[in-house]
Amino acid sequence: MKMYIDRKWVDSPATTPVISPYSREVVDTVPQASPEQIEAALAAAERGATTMRQLPAHERGAILGRLANLVAEHQEDLARTISLEEGKPLSESRGEVGRMPDLIRLCGFEGTQQRGETLPLDAQAGAKGKLGLTLRVPCGVVLAITPFNYPLLLVVHKVAPALAAGNAVILKPANQTPLTALKLTRLILEAGLPEDGIQCLTGPGAAIGAALCADRRVRKISFTGSTVVGEAITRVAGVKRLSLELGSNSPLVILPDADLHQASQATAVAGYVNAGQVCISAQRILVDRAVYGDFLDALAPEVARIATGDPFAEGTKLSAMISERDASRVGEWIDEAVAGGARVVTGGTRDHALFAPTVVADVAPTMRLSREELFGPAVAVTPVSGIDEAIALANASSYGLGAGIFTRNIDNALRFAQEVESGNVMINWTPLWRADLMPYGGLKQSGIGKEGPRYAVAEMTEGKTVVFHSGT
Ligand code: NAD
Image 1: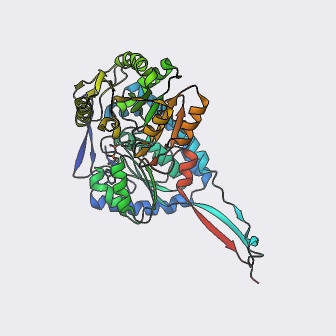
Image 2: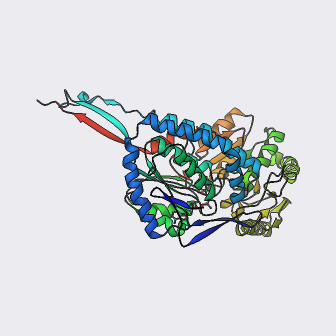
Image 3: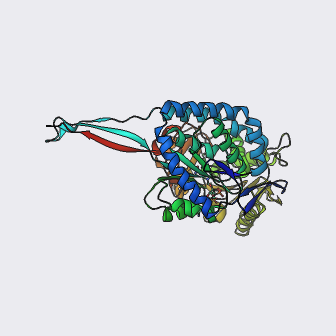
């Protein structure tokens, strides 16, 4: 596929292969944007920002309405593209695409709802007779950089609010999964977006990311990806608005009064959706000693039952990770934990990029499997003694994106909600839950800012203060 720069679909001498993680076949190639092409995209985006700023909100909303319909019409093709380039089971890809029309419509609506306020200037002496008000204005050029794990959802969570708010967008999708983003760009243009309202550049982030992030024509960077890359972006960005949706090693606490059946079934989903490659995967399972054995007994068969294989085969629930290198890293971390005294309860094996769904018990919080972001299909189970230790361990992480607790005790649930340092807290569910309209974003090293249509639109606009002075 070609990339889209300055109103044209273009190639580049250097290309990147897009490899299907399960079949290991090259399914397509995409261009690697050259320095000249990056400059052309930035210049076109600057012109596009002027075009977009002049487009009334109702027209932007109408474009997004048409885009929502187009995404629904192309649902199956988009889902198959996601499974092909990312490797997740087709049922999951269909779920990912199925959420998009509503999300896009909500963004379109929020773009029409930008409000300012009048200022009570006469509360201060000397301001009598003046009229003050605030306006929301688009940022201008929004740079959207996205990770591999949700090639459509996480792109839409940036591009739709940015366009709804009247910005021009430069989209840089993950190098492993650019095809879905390029197809979405086509649909955005088909929906009637001004041709310079979007640029979609492909290529390795390490090679092209810094030039984009450092450029002064970009006013806002909306980045989702690893904390390491997020931090690198903060170092080159300069004076810009930044939203960072970064990594996590989300805790899930199981107290003795939990419904163990429900908790084990939910954990057998929350650790393994998309082969564990979800920023809010349940990774650290902190189980009260009183029910530790019972919980493991309930969890292990649920996890062992997860059907693995070809993402396009009926019934597959877990398929390949994004690369064999990542699957092998998961194996190394598990081996390291076992060498330190942990034990594999189920799973632990690997076939190329497909790592079997795994439960590791007796994991010490200091082990890498617990301490760092795994981003793979395994959970690290650790015994705890009561709510105090559970909260202390939940917080013993540099991350703070998602957290969950299973308990029927309202006081413990309340304490968890108030004391756990996490952007999203789930009571009687796992961290792996999101409604697209809710504010979503991390604390601590998990990031800055919130996504979700209303919040992303707000973060993709800026405030202006206007004061009318009388002529006398
Ligand atoms: P990554 O950080 O390797 O890459 C993300 C994007 O950044 C890609 O488009 C990549 O090409 C680009 N990039 C790489 N180097 C860059 C640089 N120097 N400058 C600018 N851009 C650069 O992440 P990944 O492996 O694609 O995704 C996995 C990570 O994303 C995990 O840490 C996961 O937790 C995180 N994530 C977070 C959320 C969230 O909402 N908080 C959601 C999904 C994924």
